[in-house]
Length: 270
Image 1 (cartoon, rainbow, N blue to C red):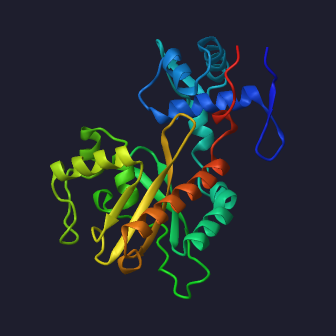
Image 2 (cartoon, one colour):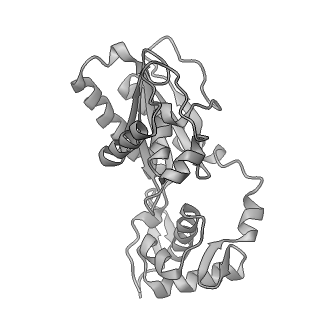
Image 3 (cartoon, rainbow, N blue to C red):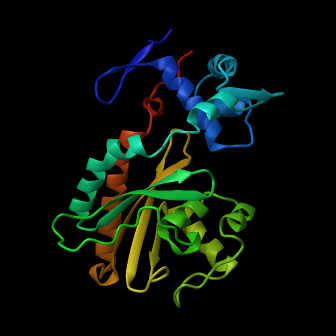
């Protein structure tokens, strides 16, 4: 049998069973229409028997519900979570890293967290200390998903029917270069999936460039996004743009290490 504890990134012992149970809950949250034991086991990369035992305990506690062979997040988990602000603890955990990324890139950087299937909420905005002028506070603002970098990341996670729902079945023209056709959006989202990041240039607002990169959970689902926003004239060459994207990807990995569970790296043992 394997050890019952693992060391966290901070060197503190963590209970393996608790970490695995949390991984199961996150896997269920990533797909809302129910999953079998086999599907969950594959998603969390644990033996089927281990996942079955975890599900039995979670079902007894009301954290998981079962309908025939399909498992869903449970009623008591929903009851406990309904009054929780999901961003308060998160921002305090990662704010220093986001600020360091903004300083290193010398650009305004934002962190957005996924809420449900169709929303990304901007929860933190950091400006580089070397620049005296700060962009207006964007927290809580909403933009059309097809015209924003974070929005494109989210849409790239969805199928075509879900994309129609998420966009309200319309692609509003905000600037002369905003994508306004479904064919054009399909091609753009396929590029996002292949390259692993999304961008907008003059699509939401003329003169503004934005790039967003994903932060994924242990099961590979999109949980958050890190983005930078800058005047287009400052990103004058492909070389500079590539450098900025690489810096943003490195920053996203640092943020991810703060918010994604230890279960990402736990070895599967029987």
